[in-house]
Image (cartoon, rainbow, N blue to C red):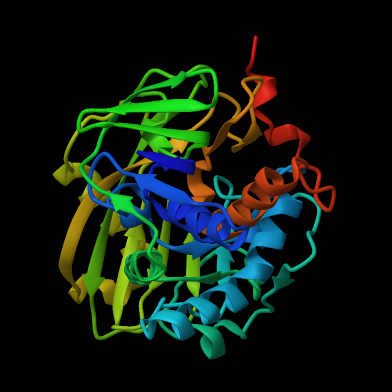
Amino acid sequence: MASDVIVMGAGLVGLSLARELQRQQFQVRVLEARKAGGGASWAAAGMLAGYQTQHPGLRPLAIAAARLYPSWTAELERETYLPSGYRRGGTLFVASPEHAAPAVRLDGWEPVVPGALDGLEPELRAEGEIWRVPDDHSVDNRQLMTALIASVRGRGIPLEEHTPVVAVEANGAGWTVRTEVRNYTADMVVNTAGAWAASFSTPVAMPVRPRKGQMLSLRSAARLRHVIAAPGVYLVPRNDGRILVGATVEDVGFAPGVEAAAIAELRQRAERVMPALHEATVDQSWAGYRPCAADDLPILGPTRCQGYWIATAHYRDGILLAPLTAKIIARAMATGQMTRALELTPFLPRRFEN
């Protein structure tokens, strides 16, 4: 079965890319080892924290991605008539010795003056300095994935779930993607398999590993207007009244399940900054696996093997960076040139190629 492009991985990055590739007039097929959108895209909190990004190389990309999000989600909602859960409101950053604000004030950060907190978040309790990041927003990533899957299917893009890739091999004229179900051929392939990007045989090995994160959601009479970033915890409000609390960062491979002690610690940290959550009930707890490169930066672009592309390792910014990643990679595949509007050298696969 032949396609111009095969996208391997149906998370937010892979499905966003499939839509953009179709817009560039490619015939595209998406292969997913499990259920579409069931990996990090399902497990994330949905923070769009571009203006909190302090890494000097990543910050311009993150801010550009944050600026794209309002129009991108609005377009997706118009197309599918489904919600994305996009919320404005910004982030309140609670500083402490172990959770320091930037040493140099960054654009987009505003100090919250004493006495102003009650007007912003009456339920919040904080002893340290507080900063507001008004242009950092959030999205309900599970609603977003539902809309994106509907868009891809509605556009007639083949989406093959439960089709694990075994190997990607050059075949002379292009590429063969061998799966446990059948073989596919294409002129070009893109590895968007997230934390599983190194789990099958590829022509170019990339140092991508999973970092596990455990989270929970709470139901409470208390309400939040902002995302809260506090020492050892973050709180993300949802439109249905739930509050998401996260998250651990663990180098334990694909160790499964959630641990009661980790969930309890996250809740305790949340209650320190929002005591009203003491009366909340736990709605759900879960774990996911963030894709992480050796240098904690995304891997984006072509490899030394012509026609084999990579778009993965977004680590904690996968939800934020996915739509912009899709536009950058699709345009580059169509033109043969990575955009010069952003400095992308730090993210190119060649930094890991021998």
